[in-house]
Image (cartoon, rainbow, N blue to C red; front, top):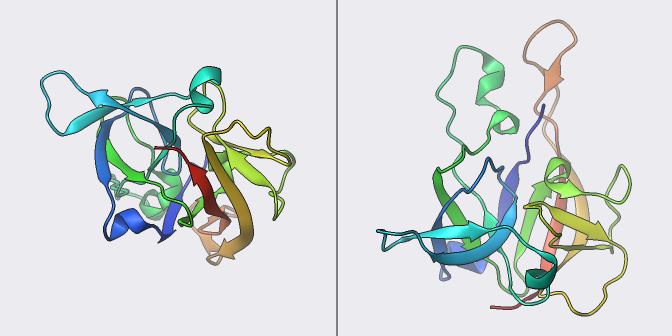
Length: 183
């Protein structure tokens, strides 16, 4: 199974914004989103990450999970692929503040798409009871976070990484521009 991969194309938080430390409430993947919560008990820098709900989607903005992919098992070439990286429950990870006009990319595995491929011009929003973004063709106007799909990019080349016929290292990114993110 391939996991979601994220790319920080043009985020203000990389240079002058906030990068938060959040505790993963369950297994996560890079490119997932959530609401920034309060401080974890006994911590002064680590916050909780809240899963969006129907009510919170209209009230709270999102932060983007983008943690350094560290794979300790180097016994196989495939283990070094970011597509094999997932974030364990209770791990403290990076969450980036998202601002209007920020641009980031997430592989298709990190988004619940309408069809098999994303549509340029459609939008992504938070969804109820999920850390994944959701593609929609129209907005209801009440969303606290809205991203617009501005491009699709295929990056990489096929490389044999295991048994005969098994290939990897081709990533299909969905490029997203942040249109709205309520603080």
